[in-house]
Image (cartoon, rainbow over all chains, first blue to last red; front, side, top):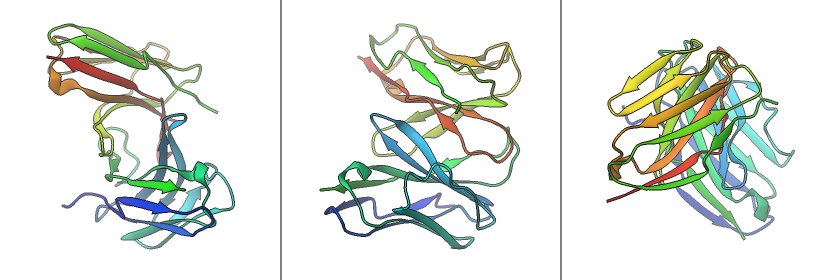
Length: 116
Length: 111
């Protein structure tokens, strides 16, 4: 398996522009998570889906952030309009089920976002 | 909000030395995981601990979960340069919940 795939790997944009980050989870995994990592705040959970349905979006910082999962093999995280404080590495992760010992969260390589 | 405090934030030691990093919380977690992250990559799971007092060993790495399931430690024996990386602990409230991560310990092992 190719693992969790994220694109783009790097994104540089200007303040006010729309940014869309993409994720393809591991096939057969029922859960998909979006995280954001910064030096100041560490790795934070933004939102997660179960069977393509958003379950908990309490970590989404503002209405400027939105996430969708139109099917089991694709999810997007959109920021509109983007701001410099959104600069971070955004990770997508997926896992199969809810068993603590057997259902590992697998992380993608991340998208490094820079908003100028 | 459940918080995980990791210490130390940064640690630089010589090859062959032993070290311990800590992960503490005021909250009880159903399980706790340790991850290792290298630059430009996502975190990779090292171990999951579930039972209070549980000890797990992974070669030169020893992981312990506190009796009250609020804290954990990672001990590395005879550290090697290949152990260099960011070590993250993460707690789960149970089931399908997303993880709460500590800010991590940046570990550098000098040859």
